Length: 237
Image 1 (cartoon, rainbow, N blue to C red):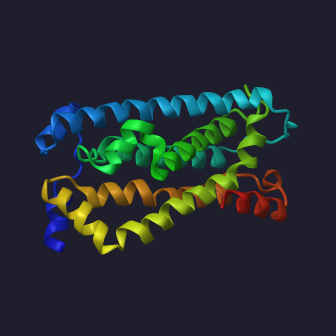
Image 2: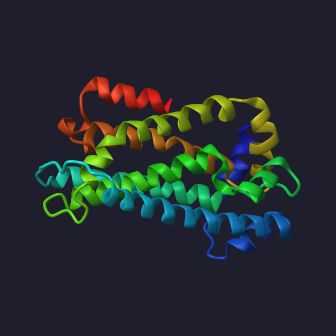
């Protein structure tokens, strides 16, 4: 097992501008590569749509604007958090291998799209939330969207629940499962794709990022009472 893990990890990171050539070089077919490129484009589009809808919601939802002072520390943490989540999302979007032609995952993604999977959904949600949180903190003194700061606080705990679920479910259902390792992890490692690093980064980063967001970035008086936070989180679960 250690030898197989080393085979994939030594080629990290698989950063090549020509992603199509990269997937072909590790043995993917033309059809599989075409599916991967299409799903990558759709994933980028999903983030744009998600961010646009979230900003639009600040104009439609009446939320009492909360007075808050600019904090350089909170802003720096929010931006750092957003960069970390962006890195995890990018590694998942660009680095995750395409599903095999004719396999169930390939049929699902071709029919429904990349957001059919919880990993894509979670990272898209957390990515949108983290950058809007950074935007809200950076312009807290003169906000272009007055309702943005209270709104990102309103959804902070539900987003954190999604992030925690992503990490814990991955560890339980994938990383420590022998079947997943034999059927998914080891074959890609043997083909030179650092599947171990890709999977760990795009699933593990979410949890500490969520902790930093709720515990350090968000303002306690805007998060609301502990009972309200608990109710919102339970609804997400």
